[in-house]
Every structure is written in structure tokens, then in C-alpha cells.
Length: 51
Image (cartoon, rainbow, N blue to C red; front, side):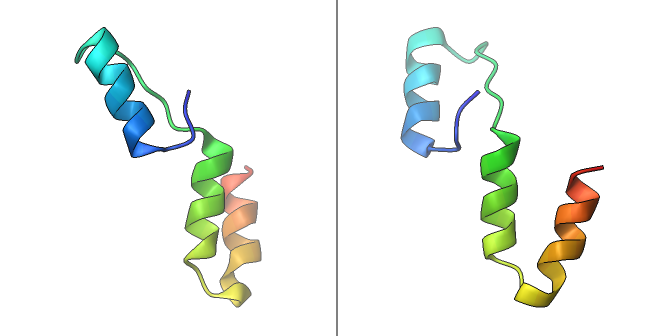
């Protein structure tokens, strides 16, 4: 599991090949999504994600 860094994903692929399974950390993904949303909708999106 990684935080979404593109270079880290590339390094994993370079070392382990295309068969490497990489999962994005859900906490980092949610944090990044929320940063792009207007303040007023963030609480509802956070609630839906936590279900």
C-alpha cells in the first residue's frame, strides 16, 4: 500500500514488474479528494466514504 506517489509506484513496477499489486492508501485518497471539493460538501462526502 502506498500514498499515491507516482515515483514510488514506478519504482515498485520497475523492481517487481507489471504483476506487482499496488493499492492506494484510502486515507490519503480521501484527503486528496476532499482538498478539491468546496468546503460545504466535504462533510457529506466524508460521511459517505466512512460507511
